[in-house]
Image (cartoon, rainbow, N blue to C red; front, side):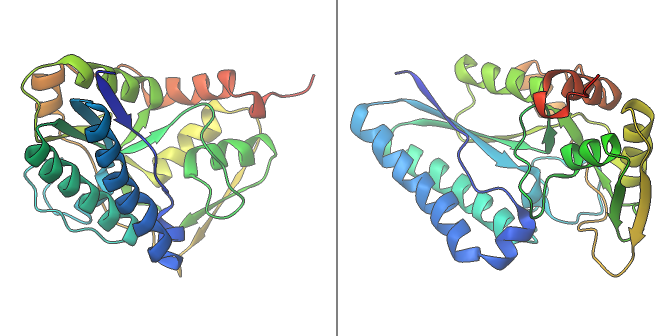
Length: 246
């Protein structure tokens, strides 16, 4: 075995606020256990799926990898801690490590729990059902939505590209979209009618987030190719949960 992709994690920001101990056990303790197992069988490289959430709310946009992390949730703290663990342990045990800070990934098959579902599949589901799209705060907060195929291309490149040891690299679309933009795009692309409802009493999270992809292009030859509109169409087409009965 040449490389391990470390993709396992608990990933809900709101859930992590309620259950920080469980998030620490899975995301931090699980990472340390993985590194020990890799050492024991002689795997020489690990590619970790980290998160753009480690940056928190930063004024400078797009966000570069050397921006000081400012995690705003136990989930983000757990991902940042896991990055430090794999880099430190890797250096001590002679294993190559690279962490990809993935921004708001979406696509077919994304988990959609009843509580705190990810926004993209939830909005698709609600639009197909002619339901409501609940937007926290004023919806002007921005995110970097990246389609899963683009994420996979970055993960694949990180398997074999040399001179990545110890790096953290952003993976996103490089395009900033507000939640209002997402609502408009979903309702334009997805068949059905949905009504957006704005809840100013609930925080919308960090105000702005967009990935600077300079390092990803330089090190991984990474160029995202799927726009938000095309990504939504592909998600609708490929995810069997969204099939519309004729």
